[in-house]
Image 1: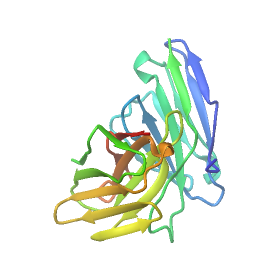
Image 2 (image 1 turned 90 degrees about the vertical axis):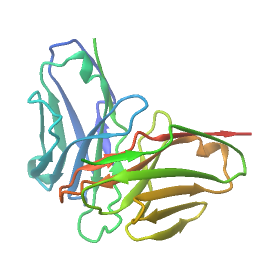
Image 3 (image 1 turned 120 degrees about the vertical axis):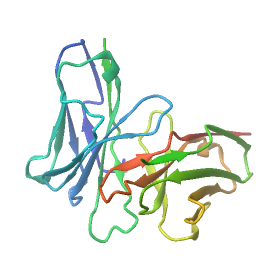
Length: 116
Length: 111
C-alpha cells in the first residue's frame, strides 16, 4: 500500500454512459497525475495537477475526458459518453514537488474500467 | 517527440544477474526512472538517474549514459518474486510535467 487510494477498483459500464473515478493522494503530495494503462503497455500520461491547478493535459485526450482537483486534495477523472476503446486501467499517482529530486511517483491500485 | 525502447521479455534463473536495457529519445532530459509492476499491481518506483554512472539500491542498480541516451536496470541475486514488468520512464523534455513510460520488459525468473 503506497498511501494513494482509488475508488472504485472496478467499474463496468455500458457504452455511452458517464463514469467518474476518484483518487486520494498522499496528503502532503502537491503533484497528482492520471494515467491510462492497457495490457502489455506502460502507463500513458493523461493529465497533471500541481495543487489545484491542472497544468498539463495530453493531446491524446479527447474532450470526453475531464479531471478536477478541488482544493488541491483528492482528484476526480470523468469520462463522458464512454466508448469500448476507453476500457483500460486508470492509474493515479502523486509525488512531492520541492525536495523530491528523484521525482518518484507513488501509484494507487488503479480503477479497471470495462465498457460493454 | 519522446520515445523509449526496451526489450519486451527477458528470462533468467533464480540467483542469476539480469540487465534490462532502455534507450530513449527526448528533446530535453530530466533523468531516467525505473518502475516495477507485478501482475495486477500498481507500478512502484525503483530508481532514478539524473547523472551518468551507476546508482545502487540493494540488489538493484541502475546505470545511465546521457551521451548514448541509454540506461539499464541491473537485478542481482534474482528471486522468484522479481518476476514482474519493469518500465523505464523519462520526463517530457519540453519542460512540461508529462512522464513518458516505455512499453515495459516482462521478466520471468525460473527456478
